[in-house]
Length: 180
Image (tube, rainbow, N blue to C red; front, side, top):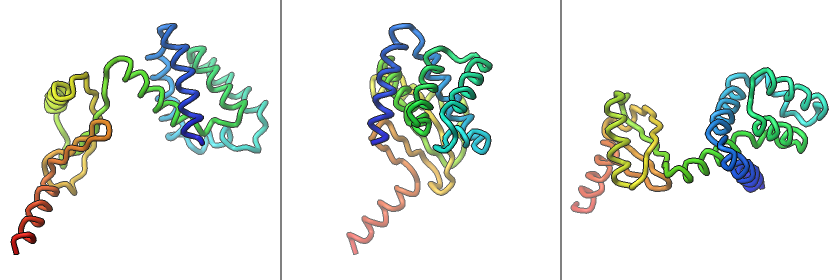
């Protein structure tokens, strides 16, 4: 049920902020909040605890949003989440919101895994090539995983392109077993 709730909050927030030209700002604020909540987990844990009084949570959120200079839509969302004991949905809401914004802007997210870090030039070239293949602007997030030995594993949406050395070795093994 939380995925549906998060999607509903994200959809409603997106509709309001897109019309007002604030969608990118709100997306960045939400992503920053999710990152900060992860980095300062012990400090923000009381905001997520059901036994902390709602009034205390709301006061803390209001002081924080004012001090941080967050946009009104982000502040209203945080207050609504606290009011309805839904602060735990912040991460999924941020992800669903970014997905809607990217969709509206014609941007697709891609995840790239390599055995060694890519240079900025390699990352830009890969993003450009993927953009040509999918016909949309591609934003890459990269990850290093030495266990793939070499090559690249790319995920664009639900499609995975596995060009890793590990996968190539597995295919060779399968062919050898077939021919034995």
